[in-house]
Amino acid sequence: MKRAQHLDHLLSQWAFDPNTLNSRLIKGRDGRDVIQMRVDMGVLQMETTGRPDGAQPHGCETFLDYCQGLLLDDSSRKLDDSECGEVDREFMQFYHRRICWLRLQYYHRAVMDADHTLRLMDVSEKMSPDEEWTNSHEQYRPFVLFHRTQAEALAELEDNGAEEAVQAINTGLEEIRIFFVKHEAEEHFDSDELVTRLVDLRESLRNEYSVGRTLKERLVEAVEQEQYELAAKLRDELSRRESH
Image (cartoon, rainbow, N blue to C red; front, side, top):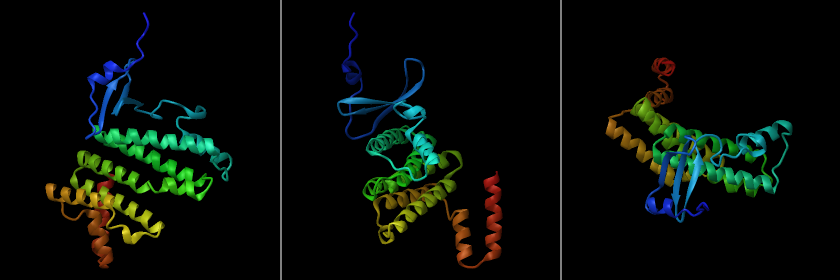
């Protein structure tokens, strides 16, 4: 009997909704977890570990690992056209899986995939064949940092409470600010849409969970006001919390 190759049954059982991100975590035929993302006219299926497509480029777990190996052998190595294409593929694959993890509320996994993308950006910048190609990727760094900060904050909220979630947002905002400063655009930081959304999330957490100034915020304020004795006490308290 000829095996059907169409997706009619799968697509009819899972309608595409253009107003939301359609994703689910299911079991593969061999029992492994896979992520599926419903897209218009089809379905994407991704592995939950390693590279989302399950490939091992040049025998490495990811293309990032392959590039890191190239740099170890030759720190001046530049990417050729084919390798640039592979970097772009890996960016897109990890983007799709990252937004699925966020939608499925697997926040730690979303952080891990965002970190992978940020490392890939760092490595590809070092190996970039030209400035134009570098900028075509660097322009998305704030977007990746936005996702990472969202995920980190929501993971902290689940694991350690609202104050740590607020602090995670502060840390993420500072990383985005560094990007703006690097590219001489700091005057646009406060009005940036991604920054505004993170600030709104932070303030909504403060209000909902009655969070005042965090320990790190109080420490920064004490240093700025030259209250060094108070700053020392706050540092001690922060160290105790972090070690705990």
